Length: 162
Image 1 (cartoon, rainbow, N blue to C red):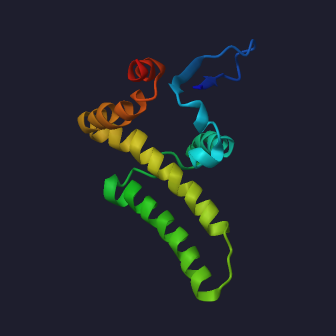
Image 2: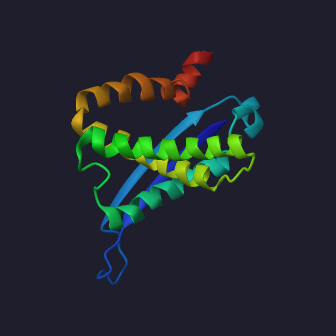
């Protein structure tokens, strides 16, 4: 089964009466997995929910950037992104510890904290680490990320079968 991924982000200025896109970011890829894996219980995650969460976390990053700008990174790596990641992790863990100690499960802090943790870690990876450590980032990009995904790209999948 081929799975096609595509995300298009268009940037339109308000003073553009035709609503033409002034700039567009486009991300697309295709992978191929065996048909027998075409079930969420076998894949191990809810595909629709995962995609929806990633999509809205992307929008949330834009919305929060309007208010906070680059505050998440302006104090350097340790006091910036790492301290934000630590704070969100602590929030998730405190919620779990309260649940264990009191027996009362209030998942709100874990849900909100996990979302913020996901955004901060993606910002850290995609922006801070990429900018400050470009050679290492590109090595990871090609040797880890792309090398793993390549096993499931259609051309590579055909080569494996042949």
